[in-house]
Image (cartoon, rainbow, N blue to C red; front, side):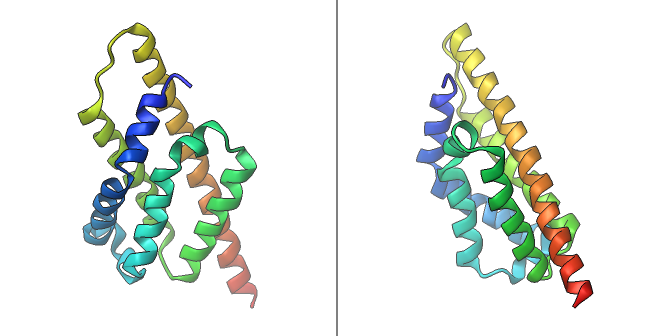
Length: 148
């Protein structure tokens, strides 16, 4: 994979990235509901995402993304997180990563630049699908709750 440099960079800094995003989620006015999530759980979910991002992008299938993010959506619905806050958390996750990569990126040639662009497109696709499946899991949990 040509974007391997980016993937390794993200994995190497996954703890710092996770802590930074957890702080943003806990302090943003658009994600106030995330303050009720235990700090350890939130940090674990975020670090897991960033530490395994190359795996998620390069090796996981749509069904893998669906399974993981439907579960996240279901769990957030059960925790009482509003749907718009869940979506904003995923947007923040992607933006936080983009800002990090912008600061750290230095392509040394056309092939490397192409690899980085390819990685970024894959990253976009991953987050789009993660958002869709998280919302599907969220909606399913809310329907089940309403039927009970």
